[in-house]
Length: 355
Ligand SMILES: [Zn+2]
Ligand SMILES: [Zn+2]
Ligand SMILES: [Zn+2]
Image 1 (tube, rainbow, N blue to C red):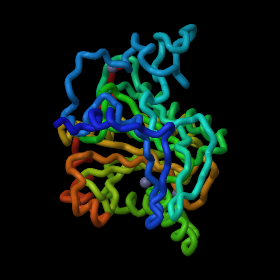
Image 2: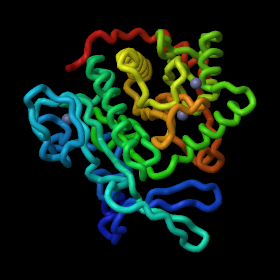
Image 3: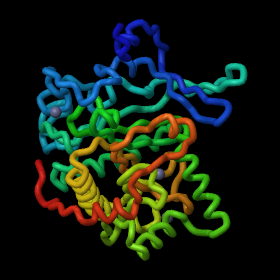
């Protein structure tokens, strides 16, 4: 019997809309979104299944996606037609949806709320390119600027609390389409991983009066051991307690809690840093599957003195197994000092790239 998720999904009645449910013991929220099961991919599919279907993200297929939310376009070109460089569309199989009221209600000892939010796809280039690292720097800068534009726009909706930008590359990292893209999921609550970071950072701020990320940057720049690269405004390093081999964080050197406050000059520099780090990972680790995430302050806050936005890049060279699921411990086989040294020594040339 075929038990891949799509076949099971055909037998699921589904909910009329996505729903958030809270685990009453540890406070973790789960999104129950039955539409997601209908995505055209089995959860065991690996590597990416070959397909004859045309890529819905390539230019010319604009009608194959929902209507665009935002696009950086050539002057004179029309929405949902050719002529774009970066394009944002709603996810066809959203984890959360924007319509409806945010109602939170109890269910005995449990809590639930409507799955109000947004789920957008940022299509990073009009041509079929699977690797962001192969895009020209200007192209990557456009993508980074789009992230800012979308967060600023979503900030206007008082129902929305958190905007999580992330990227899945390769089937092992959860990607279901190979065309270079990232995603933005906006939730009506702060995700627990961010909440834990913010709480830890607030505690440090409480007794030291400083941002722990700023202190971390100073110590890493003094030590140099875990630095992958540094530029006037950014630093990339393998964190002291890396959970995964070659885990790499990118932080702005100047304190800033919210990604959407980023300046144009910083975006220009970040484009080069991100491209360099991704090229080093791809060259050094032979095109690994990876995820990156942007951790930033909640949409309903501004200028937090204790929190500092950052990107976490996680190559998926190992699988999370029973021990990790059971304990929350991670076993990392590559010390971050060695990972950083290795990545520092991978030579890359960022001047080229498709455009
Ligand atoms: Zn494509
Ligand atoms: Zn800081
Ligand atoms: Zn983080």
